[in-house]
Length: 372
Image (tube, rainbow, N blue to C red; front, side, top):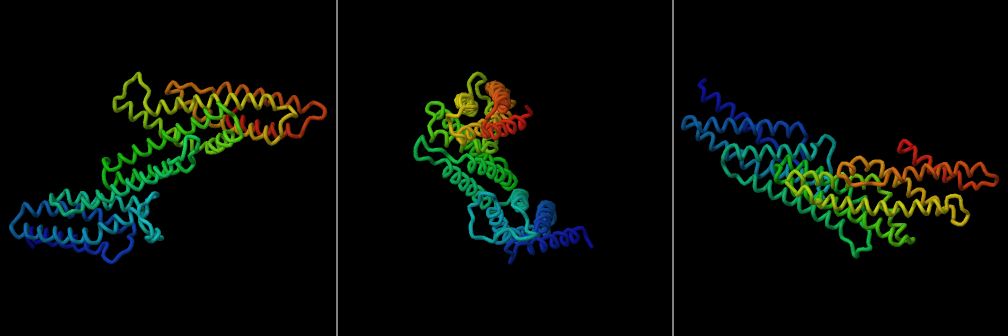
């Protein structure tokens, strides 16, 4: 057997295996996709070698290129792109089969898509695979943008967005960004990164407005908005961390060192609003802590708000200090420790209200959570 015969046999064997993957299938398992990725990379190398060989090998390379390109374009690439889109946490495809036991993940499909992208680039011939891939990635970006824009629609400045849902969508977009980066490259993923950062800045700005509104006029409605916002402490931390990430990107891109970035300005406004609101809640709690003038449920709700504020400040303080944004976490902590001592003393007095025990339990939990 000649060297050309061995190369021919190897190329045809790889080609046959590639042509079996994706035809007549609705989904693919991870091992099949791994096989496809490996074979496409080998096949591209065999094609390059054959094109520099004899006339027969060059003819073989041309025929094999057409066969594989037609199969990928008609079966493997549409299947992988379709399942990739359907399995993303934010998808523009609905109505397709859910992920089946043993089926590959969105990332597995993304790696197969990337391999097809490489195969086309490696053979130096346009088979329109990359155009289809780029079109699908652009569609994914549009879907994510539409989802975020829908979340951020508010009827008026007094409306409060759902920070919890927005934070979860930001996390989903980051997962999509990573998968799109695998499938289409960093350039395809960058718009998603910018979208997540924009949504995070907007969420922080809105939260700051809620706090500022309560400071300006502590009404039942502004109290409700503040409680609703602070009830999503973990979600607030998610968006704040994303804002700080966008700040780092802005600084690395060469933003002016003495001018606040958009993210830093949003964080500054958020912290200012939180501080003003915290002061009002601390004053209300102090005035009504051991007083019979306010309903027990009202005082308890105020203490529960302060509990969330303390938790948020404890988690946030190290990060914002790095940006030289000052947070009054320590002073809040001092005042809440004093409230705890005041309640403990009051419980020793004859006829102490049972409400004091409930209030003390909230303060004990709040201070224990932050190690105080």
